Length: 273
Image (tube, rainbow, N blue to C red):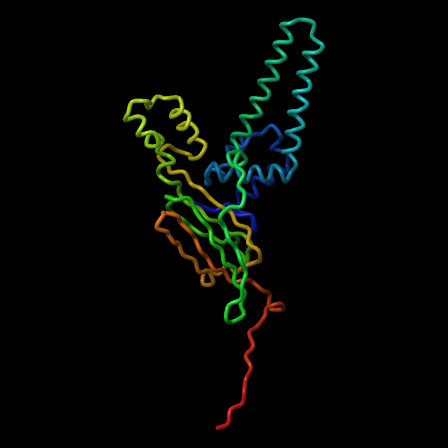
């Protein structure tokens, strides 16, 4: 599966950004609708597209415009109800306001990552100098237990980048909904037709493109300094603890222009012979 890259931008990012710039995407356009605007977007999972759609929407100021439009719509409904002379029109106005609010809420829920706020994630990044005085960026990232198909990528096609991406397949337990409630189903305190099970199965449609596909997750990391993209300069490994925790550790070589690069120097002492 391809990576959604920002620097330099991949084809999908360029197309989506241009759509915002050309006004083809307005404040009322949802991420779900925009996903169908170009076949290039279908190469990526829904969560990846939603995340980048939201970032570009905020960059182009449509997030604020959408909020203002919702406030204006609500105010208009309230004014209608205040000026109405009958109880029936007041009920209709309140219903319109409720429908508008529910519609806005549904659009926000479609943008999956915007509903989750991460704070102080278990990720460590540090810059140090090795024995040759070369700068190294060391990163340690904790991943959800049970993830598979883990891939580490440095974004960009040039000699240097400041972005890295980690992709992985969801743990099996998170898309085997009936398995999550196997104990309750076995005890017959819940059936497979329970509204909760049905709702969670429907939610999975937002996380994968087909019922037979496993949901994919990704994590984008902004590195503290530019690093080389040459694969020969990247050293990474996966470690798994006895408690099942998965940690990705990587050492990346800092990128310097020849003008600013620090070259190691060694003192030469004369020796009699």
